[in-house]
Image 1: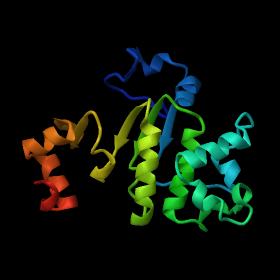
Image 2: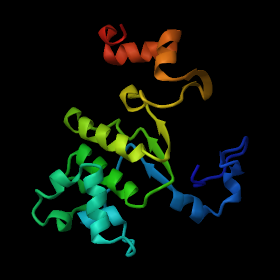
Image 3: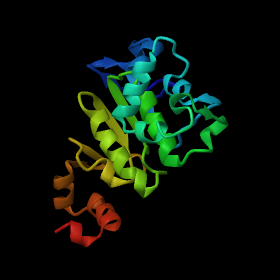
Length: 197
């Protein structure tokens, strides 16, 4: 979707325009991407959120962190937003790194949000914060969420279930539960029968 590599078949349309007709730089400015593994680089928290974009102010960095609820742990760090980050951000939990990644995405105010297994590696304690942050992040923008953790997509307008690259089911959460197909089986496995009744 962000044209890091070109696809050979089919079409991806945004507002009925093929993504190959958009300049790559414009496309990437309008799409926010949150990956499963969030990378942090040497610097400080603020530079990790703004990605060295000088047009992003300190106030915008702090507002983005607050928006995704990363401000709670950041403000407790020595130096707050200027707390040092070592390569990879190994001094932070996976959930904290992911909150920084969400703030990094929201600070650019993308029109389209792509979440690629964005909650797969987080601890349960941070999941609730991230779920609230995700709910806010999705407001007013098109969101494409790739997920095995079904709690991430339960409230989606449309869920596509893929198997070996093919769509095998489609619908809302309630519709897919009623079908008692693959989605139902995955949901039952993750949450237990008591949540299905």
